[in-house]
Length: 230
Image 1 (cartoon, rainbow, N blue to C red):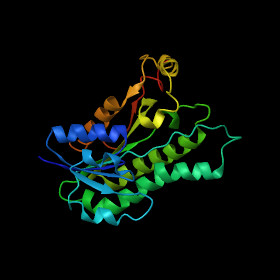
Image 2 (image 1 turned 135 degrees about the vertical axis):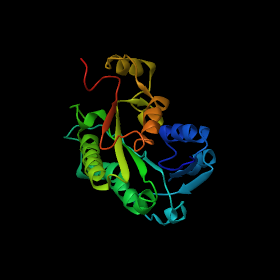
Image 3 (image 1 turned 180 degrees about the vertical axis):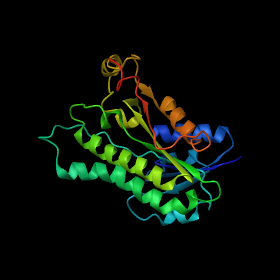
């Protein structure tokens, strides 16, 4: 069956990889972003800020089979340097935007046989890490929202999260700015490597069929073993 898939934050490296996987299987992908530089990668591109007007989503198909919310932040600061405005900004991107989008397209997600929704958390939401308090707080809010919503929307809509560790993407470029930093980060993980956009996209893409595969309300760790192994 050909699916209609909506990718919010389609300019992200992971969003672009999910788009490639979906297009390879003949699905119809609708990608949104506040940055039009990657618009050519999508057959259906929508300029959108999830925390402003969502009117542009009025023109998506009535039936959306899969939704992926990709926007994220990496703002690493000590509590002494962290401001309430920093925390609010991370909540806006990581939680409020997801809330706004899901609420807006819920009628589309509940059509016919329902849909699968994939959100992105972080390993730091459940594994204490210095300088991660603001991102951990915002992603923990997202996880709680996802699990509660999964219970509320079952059996029509399946909702799951992927919780990665550090991934070699544009978003993390300021952390992985040298080969030495990449190697140091890799050595912190039991699998002695860092995540790639393709590996995380593959996990997320599998969860776009979560409803058919009897999976909902889960947080899937894709973190090289960091959260559970020593």
